[in-house]
Length: 127
Length: 127
DNA sequence: ATAGTTTTGCAACTCAGTTGCATTAAATTA
DNA sequence: TAATTTAATGCAACTGAGTTGCAAAACTAT
Ligand SMILES: [Mn+2]
Ligand SMILES: [Mn+2]
Ligand SMILES: [Zn+2]
Ligand SMILES: [Zn+2]
Image 1 (tube, rainbow over the protein chains, first blue to last red):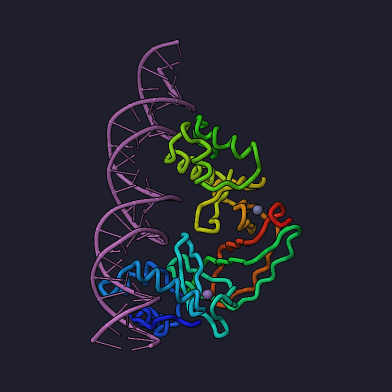
Image 2: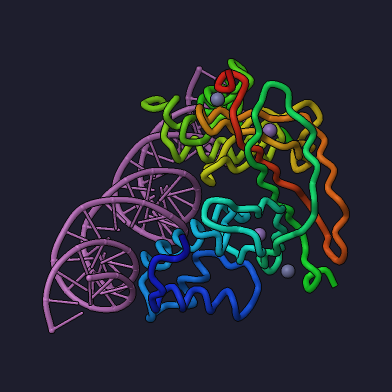
C-alpha cells in the first residue's frame, strides 16, 4: 500500500523521525510542529504512518502515547516491533530496546502481544 | 502507619475488593459506587490505599488506571507487587499474574521497575 | 485545466483525572 | 458525653490528551 499521499504534513513528521532516531511522545511532536500544523493533523498523520508500518506506537509512563521509527521489515499491518521500551524517570527519554524477553506460557490464555515498559535512569541520568 | 481514618468511603472501596478478588479500573469503581460516593473521593481513597500497601495500581490497555488487592507483604511504600498483568482484548477483564519474567540486564541503565501487560484472550473468551 | 478523492484546519467535544475550598465526619481530648 | 482537632468528603470548575464533524484546501489522475 504505502502512504496514500506524500503531503507536507507527512513529510514534516517523517523528517522529525529521520533527523533523530529517537522515540517521541505525541505531546512533544505537537509542540515541535506548533504553528506549522494542527494537532488533529499530527494525530492523523501518525495513525497513517503506523498503519503503513513506518512508525510504531506504545504507551509511556503516564499513559501518554509515544511513537518511534520501525526497523526494516515492518509494513502495512505486519508490525514486527514488539520490543520492550525503557523510559527514564528523570529526563523522560524513551528508548526502544532490542532485548528479547521470554514470557512463560500462560495456561488457558491466548497471548497476542506483550507490552513491556522498563522504568529507571538512562545512561545520561545515571552518572 | 495504616489508613489514617476508617471512613465509610474507605470501607466501601475495600468491600468491593474483598467481595471479589479481581482487578478493577477506576472507571468501573466509580460506576460501582455511583450515588454513594463522589468520583473525587474514589480517586483519593484509592491513592491512600495504594500508599498504605493495601492495593496496587497499573495501566491497562488504553492507558486507564487499574487497581487490585496486594498480596500479603506489601505495606506503606514497600510494594512487592511487580508482577505482570493480563488483559483480555474481548471482555477487558484484567488478571494479576504470578509469572516471574526474567529481564536481561541493561548496560548503563538503572532499572527500577518493570511494567508488563500481556494482551490476548482470557480463559472464558478463548473457548 | 477538470474532476474525484484524500487530507487538513478549526472549533467543539469527550472523558479521565485533578484542584480549591467550604463542609462534614472521624478520632482525640477533656 | 461534649468539645476540639484534623483528616476526609462533595461539589463545581478545571486540565489536558485524544476525537469528531464538516467545510475548505491540496493531492492525483484523466
Ligand atoms: Mn520501539
Ligand atoms: Mn496486580
Ligand atoms: Zn534520563
Ligand atoms: Zn475475556
